[in-house]
Image (tube, rainbow, N blue to C red; front, side):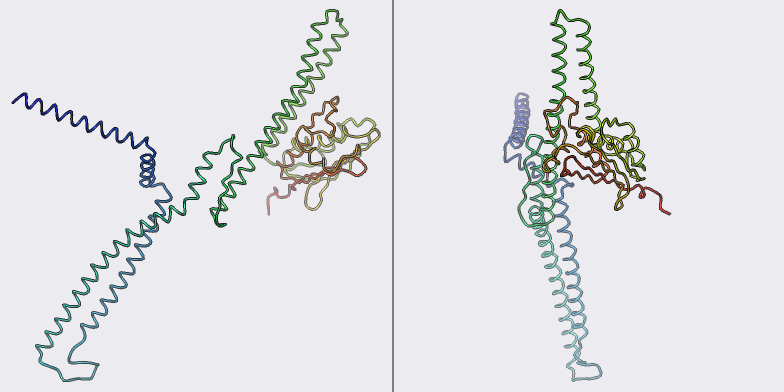
Length: 426
């Protein structure tokens, strides 16, 4: 008997172990099989209270249940009122004040009781059947609401899956949602526009980094060549070494200016941390006074113009415009700097003579590391001046316009918002 009990308990434990193994295997197969994974994902999606589809389904079902309950209540009240009118009918009266011959009293009482029982049975049957129909239609409405909400939210799931797949490597992909121009289509078009702007920004950043690396590689190569030449020249005297050191010092200064320009460009593209009133005339006057004009005629007509922005960046903008006008000029040419208020804007404009610029090349000159003549490198100008001007103007919400002059040179005009809007209103 003891041996049999031990065998029974052993078989029981083994069967429970086999059941547990089978359950674990079934769960594993369901999890890693494509159909089982979809089923588990669907169940998690259904039971999650945070899904929009479930909330829409509950909303549709509850609205139908509420409207159905109101309809059943109105119908029940109408039937009940009709029953009361029928129960008030007497054989002795057809109309108020008018009598008709009546049968025996016992027959009238029996007829009233019969009619009353019939009405009560009718109302009870109507109530039971209405509740059953209401329950069936409520369940059906929830099912239909689930299907309809899934159909409505299908474009959102498609957009969600597509956006998850998009990264820096395939940012060229778009949602390209088809269908009527409704709210979902407008949302998809907005996301496509955002992806397009991000794509353009990434391309511009890659181009900017490549150009910056190229501009930094060139002076480093020259420095390496000069140092290597000085080391290999065993007969170099103090004068030749001093000349080499002077050239290295000039190249180092150019690199410092380039890095400073890159930092200014990055700072201006990052936006403004604060704004304050800035007088364009005062900043332009300081820039004009500190700029060596040489044989150029540096003319200025400075009228007070209070702009809203960062004083250091605005002065850097004016300095870059004047420096660009002086560098790319002709012998005996002129530079004109004008400030003032025009059409409700605080305006600074810089005009210079110089070589003829094709009108289709003006927009290119506003890009980083772009020069009209890329072979000119002796002046240490890296083509960042006008791009910094554009970035600072964009950070200040200013209007920038650049036009090539027919007789040569360039005319640049920057219009800043007035600082009057910053003053407290009385």
